Length: 338
Image 1 (cartoon, rainbow, N blue to C red):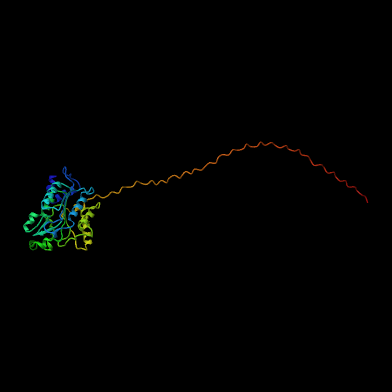
Image 2 (cartoon, one colour):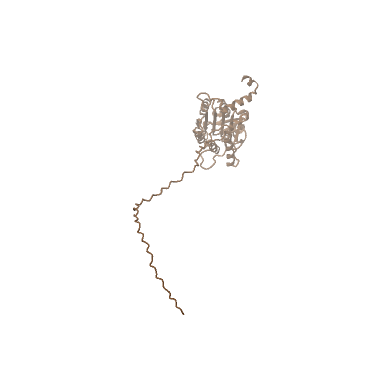
């Protein structure tokens, strides 16, 4: 084996190892969960009433309920209306519990901001009066991606439903002058920033805002609503789930919101082989016995036997004697001479 490894390109060897792991060739460490998810929703921002969002907490609750259901079987670590301290504590717990897992998933719904080439996820206690508070009051997305990669999970997923209109870009002068264009929404990640065997999905493409709700009365953001619907479908690989969400969101919003999906290209095939909900097996009905049934037995009532009278005794009749008829006397003729 050592001789074989020496002559094999290291990147090809790592790819082969990852593919074997997906196929179940390696066993999980003792006590490790197969699927672990960190689900964060931030809605009730304290610094400004204009920052409050309607759906993120409900998004986190509903997605967490699906992931934790028997059909998907995730260990879910929920962090609702997270302060920056809550977010860091949840991330530490996630990294510990997801060590050696088959699937490690991080979901964030709330405000996000880009500043000087860095992406930040905003927690509910952030005031951001100065730009240096980004490092102490928010969660740097790079930190999340680093800890996600550090789990060593076979398949890693990061879902960010936070590319929305950002009030910070209008109220904080330092955001206006030092952040990128397009209202300081999260920027796309480069390939070098994505850990191996990781899929990253942004709810919308750079420079586009996400719709608030898909229909009147909806409790979830359009992205999360359709994500939940697609994740619950049996037999769908991860890549297909996000492709369907992409197409459905683009159609429902007439192209105003288009999700962005990026993967580690070296192992993109992994996501076409990883299924969240096993396909339903249809029980095979037993073969029908096609031998025709025997004809029904018709019961014919039998007639009551009638008593047969004894046969009459026949006495032979006396045979009469034959009596010849009396003879008729002959008439004599007299000869006359002339």
